[in-house]
Length: 237
Image (cartoon, rainbow, N blue to C red; front, top):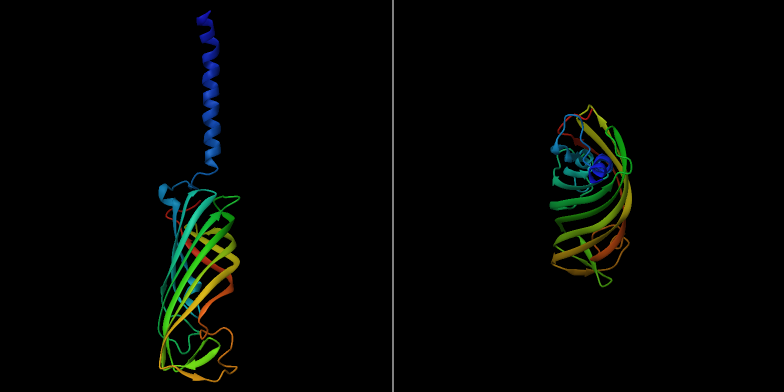
């Protein structure tokens, strides 16, 4: 009797085990790295550049980033901007001297329908900007009073977040075009270190909106639109 039981149930048990592993492999494949035919683990990492940041009117620079995508449906991306002013054709920094800045972005992405040729995604992005420079013979508003100064060292710190939607597609096998649009908010904190203060009357010029003459923190809307160019280590056929 025991021998007959072994004959009947062992093949069935093996089939169930094989079916379980095949099912698990299929399920895990939906979230595994999006490898192409000739790629290996390096395809998880995709370097990117943001060429439009070279023409930014306030903080132009070379924006370089890296997307890390261990899962087909989920990735993280970080970007850092190196200052570069050589290609700017419009400068919105009149009166700023010795300008220095750094810009960092990081985001988490979700790809609802990942595939090799094109795909769309949703992302939550955090941003941090810091800008430093000095002005000469301008003005500052403190406690609802206006002051002129001989010189002031100014620091702008921006911290915010954006919800984005994007679409990326393959060109020339090796490259990925990553386009996006988004909206959010940021807190901008302005600090002054002035030299040679003297009070002046409040005028329409001194109280104009959008300048750096106001100290403190303001919440501002933030809109994001652009395109990045990514490079794949292997052609994506």
